[in-house]
Length: 299
Image (tube, rainbow, N blue to C red):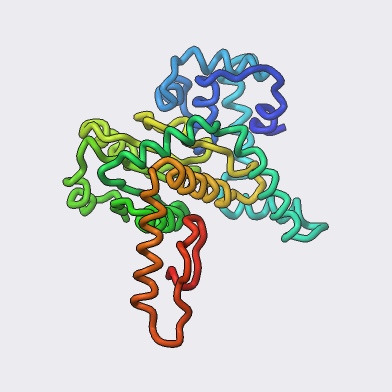
């Protein structure tokens, strides 16, 4: 039985420190299976003794034994894109791939409200509402999500700046950051190597940080001011982008509910501008746009 399966079958209570440690292990199982406990614990921001206690909770004699178990897993099946696809195809071999994907997405989405409570969502929306400017960063698959989220925030009347890359060119953009600003980061599976530097700079400036992530977000340091983290599916499931999209859509709606009409007013102006610039013969918007829906006239 794999380590993830052992964790899922564990009937006791995992502490926040346990979850952060597991998040580090599962972000890169190949590397983690060769690292000493002190290094893994440091990355997770927990005491080294947490590793030994967690191993014993899960039925291992010691952390060394648990690490050896994980190493045997990764040696037999390296955690790569090819390996994950192969595993998914094996599971779907006798049925409809579409049915299996839909079932996986539904199962993962249904667990979302159990992982992020309403109070945290409201706090995140209020953080965005009160921001002077919102900086957005996402890498890999997350970049598509942040691009769409940026468009919807802009159409809701918010000042948004997208960070395309965390390299030397980002300095030009980050120079204008102030303590009244908010940095929103979307980071999945293996967060960007330079994310730590971005979060550290955000803290130095005094700005706030909102992190939208999967369970890897539990191990991100420095810790964000607000973390919206939820599983995107089991290892052999399709790693859902529907889950973080649902989080972003919920944030847009929470903003519309708490910003005293700012979003609605901006969307009404958007509809007016769409009619103004519509080319003859093209359909024009006739009512305020739904803040969570992309329509042809919004492209």
